[in-house]
Length: 256
Image (cartoon, rainbow, N blue to C red; front, side, top):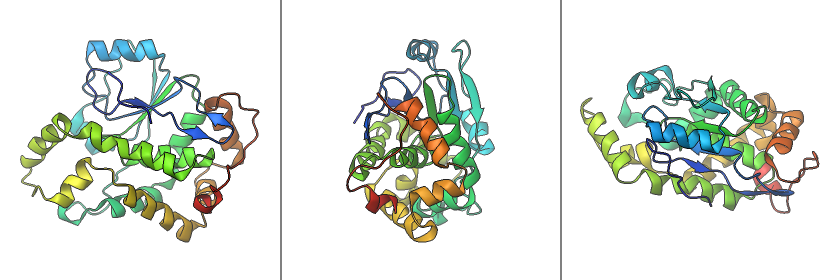
């Protein structure tokens, strides 16, 4: 799995480099990150070097108010805002769990999930997908598009899990200090919501998608990501793609 890239002002910026059906993702095409509201001049220069043409920001209005707008001056990238309120109606932090958050994102914000994936598929060049931490909204969107391209679940889960390593330390410490100002109890459950990416939660979420929607392809179709969009994803992201969409052996169990 791709490790963190040095983009000053971020902690969880990395390329998505996962094997998919028919080959690998095209190098330098798809990136995922935490928020870009603290990008330094050097960070913006790094995005220019990477040739980033589109940034998809899935933070809610509240998130952006707290973290500030993306600092993309001079990058030359189009900003696409797809706000998703991951907490839903449960504003009391003690009520939040990752499993509940993921079901809110997929169940209540399917339209936005579909919009984000289509924005990846139609990007004119390298694209960055991000939210606040780059693990939950970002993690789900990236996982779904990888599965749609025929990635094996274990590879998708490994990419998802890397986030916890990147957020440990300074990023988490800063967010905990900010949270304490709101008198939120810092429990182990809260820390999981804030900064962890446990594989069992992703597996449980995809099992729920299987039971509630009939599998990942059916869910994606319900949110506007049909076979045509998947073909666009493949043409845009997969090296040596011939435009055909297929699944590797063993992936059908996960895709439903």
